Length: 378
Image: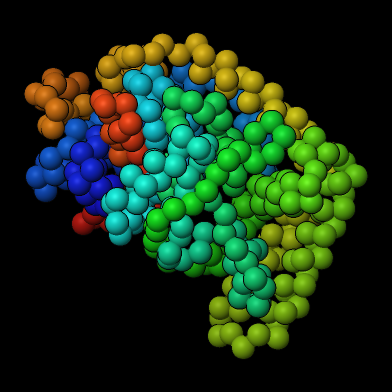
């Protein structure tokens, strides 16, 4: 259990946000069975966190083909709200498919936060890209990676950004009013390999968020501002995106790739191209307008949050105390816990460090994977 090991080595609290296939009781049992000495907070999270604000970007995509069906963004936003109320100064998001070979890299990342709004760990494992970008790399293209939410440190008590419910939500988190917030990378994180072409639906689900993020960052790279992304810009970008996918398909057909894998890659690109046909320039403009409104909504939400709360009180404020287990094994006696209900195995991990002294970091990690029987949280 990577997050627990990091929390123990760094003297951090581990916060686990459970949903769908995750079992709070099993996670608590795993920690105690393996004698991991950490402060532990485990929370069952339903499909909607009651006290988080309703965001316009989520509402406009609900019940459409573009809806995002994962709860990663909601859990990360919950982690930000919890940190703000408790007073944890810094947050380190860590996905469950990420390992950190050197725990000191988390300290190095946090050390950069006075000068940056986001500090990622450089990915030393399987590249973190969209399906289309993976195919582009296989076809011979030079494909880089960006600072991602899988291993990302942020100043929780200072930053006023949020994660929208869309693919590439971490890219949007690092955008400010006009462009990219100060961000950098240090150290190394290793992402577990996976097959991005195993299911064409993955490419279909990613396409809208990939179009928006790639389009915005292409605009910023040309020296323009987010506000310059009008319908004319998006018409041109959507056409360029169609040409890119067609070019990748043509190049892949000429590549010496195992026949089955090539077939899966082409099927994934076909799915992406099909979804792209439903993306209109006006939708891109309307989404960005809604996102700008959501940024105001989120800032207002943060300003209204109470500060200086104990973890238990902060969970109560979010209407989650009855669904949580809090154990203080490192810094104090074990607190009484409420009844523990079982949920299905899927969870997000949040490794945290309290703000005493204030420079200590809070680290948060998320997962979209099902835990194996032998490793409840990883």
